[in-house]
Length: 281
Image (cartoon, rainbow, N blue to C red; front, side, top):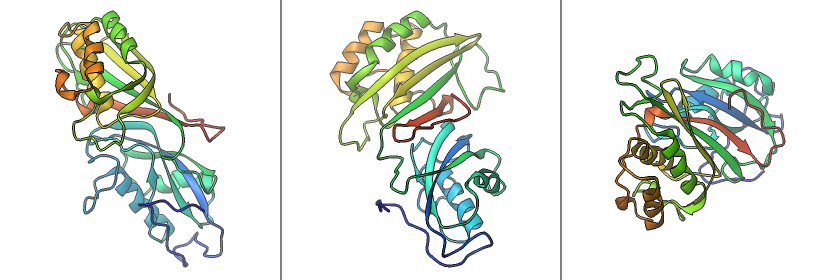
């Protein structure tokens, strides 16, 4: 089995019921959904239990009787939600793979759910394979916020021109240097990314920005959302987005980073896995 930096394999030995030290090690892929409102992002933080990874690690360790850590796919920011994030962990437990969701969910808070588990090849790594990720940004486009949407959308009381937003979206589709659309604090080696589809739709008073791509920079989707909102309300002309893109300078982009609560990671598809079935897309 491959070994990857930052991943600590479980210590061998006999733990709680359901463990067997003589069993072969399996790599399990889990699909996770969560309300990110009360958590400090997905990635575990030292001395901070309020992360999605931290909560799942704790549940796994309790279930399996030995220290177990997941390798996450997408490190969503504090306040961002997910319907289809994914992670893997290694275990020599004899717990049937299909039982992991129900077993783990009894040990997790109600705002974090494991929705699927499947065994994958021992050398599968969720961050070292080609993926297509789908994000959706939800705008509550009315004058007074709907309290039932408030945790999962951003209120925008201005009339939005969906046609102009889609015109600007076409400029951002494809492979580009997105340095103007990521945090100035990014540590990425390259800011070139590929957006495979970007579309804005309206459903009643809700406006959705759906973005698909092979990978995203720190705050990239939220900055794209903030920029397209400015286009929709008339603060930016669609053609101005091209100038911002080609400037490769975040300080040349006047649009704010849209609020985290409006963003949901809907789905992740892995090229290495033939069957990518998940329940929400």
